[in-house]
Amino acid sequence: MIIYPTPESLEHHPVVPRDQWLIARTELLKEEKEFTRLRDKINAQRRDLPWVRVEKNYVFQGPNGPQTLADLFEGRSQLLVKHFMFAPGWKAGCVGCSLDVDHIESALVHLEHHDVTCVAVSRATLTEIEAFRQRMGWRIPWVSSFGSDFNYDYQVSFTKEEIAKGKAYHNYKMQEVEIEEMSGLSVFYKNTAGDVFHTYSTYGRGAEELVSAYVCLDLTPKGRNETGPGFNLGDWVRHHDRYDRGDFDFTEPYQPGKP
Image (cartoon, rainbow, N blue to C red):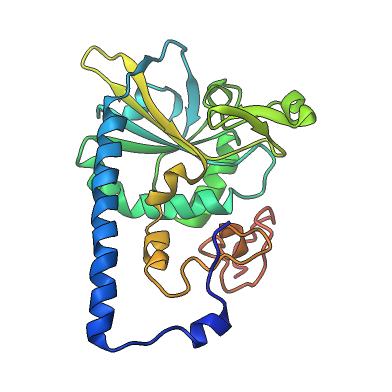
């Protein structure tokens, strides 16, 4: 758990002349530069990972009918899949996943012109997905994996038996699970022959850099200020059309015209 400043500590934060501040700032800059170099190194190692050929014929339901995994590339060679937590019967999609897609939306035009297709995948039915997508005003392609093994194979959905046992394989290890859906990101590549390869998946905080709101918050004195009860984004993030309502339950049925 990250420890954030308290209102009292902010009121009594050290204040120094600018020349002393510059000394402290340049010392921190050394650490920031080292972090940047380390991130570049990790990014290179990620690109060097071996790939896995996707042999299973996954079929998704999209607005224009059934689509295979290869179809989702939409003519590009790289595919970024947002595993969006949205199970059949839910009244709305996950708040945290919605925050992710809010940020992906703003980058879509740039990614699509740089050989990357982004798509969201959920187990909810296409009817449920389309209703929520329209509510949120997103244009990201979003397909249903209902009836497919896709979510289970990529460690983001869990069977009733796994939930009953309280254990499932997620984020590359057996761990406790309490809900049927988790979030994540997966990356695929399609070669000129049409073969599809799984190149990368990440879960939990591994996809955090997608959220530029966090990047901005990390620059501020209060930081992310996630102080409870969950000590995560659930403490403050809402669907972008819900901030003025003051409610919290993201499974509440959406009523058109209700703020």
